[in-house]
Image (cartoon, rainbow, N blue to C red; front, side, top):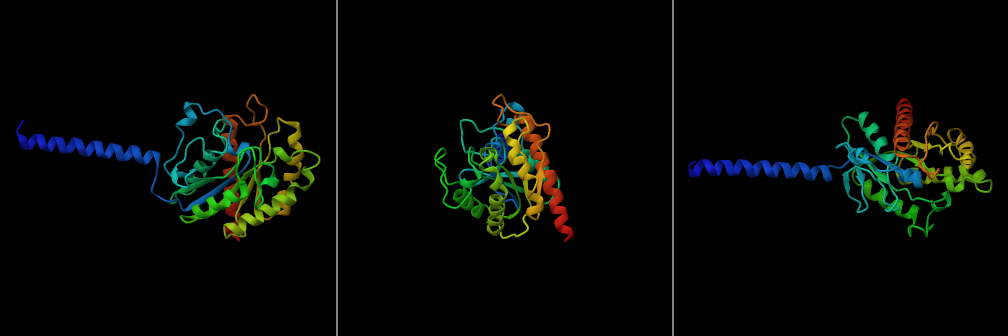
Length: 268
């Protein structure tokens, strides 16, 4: 083999290696900014506590990004959240994002995870501090949303929270507090009609019924809101958190309701 041919072969090999490294790098992060942004807010069942098996570890869609802990857009994968790193796992957010991407062929989908496990709705107020995670859930969320909106527009919000408030003392005031939060979020994202979908709590825990009953009133009391059912979903052995298949199914139900709300808004 002459010197010229050897040089050509080496150039081809180098180009192939460079291309492969570029593809690998893109699978881990993305410089593309999403145009359709969705907020994921609530407590542990939004953050996710499902077991991340190999199946879920490999689940992703190159058109679905997540806003990571460093406020950077990267390819979304489980776990989306980072509220409690030792226990966080599969939640409804990723399957929600993948379903939303199916109906938005021209746009990237950006997920902004903001849930914090164990937080009652009173922790989702300005200045409220959560000692368990050493965070300010509402204030931290505001910072992340403002950063995320530099690259796109918030198209909707999904919410799963209420286990902490599901008792006779707190449940009666739940919807009024949630209404206030929704109004603040809509001001924050500059959209008074931003679609908001709440997820019902797991029916496998009797106490959850107190908040689920209250949530039934949400669509009548707050416009442009809807409910994703938890019917048939099953828990981890802790009888508190959705297992991985149930969390994924809940995410798809969130997406179904979100699409219906968006469709209704287009008609108005």
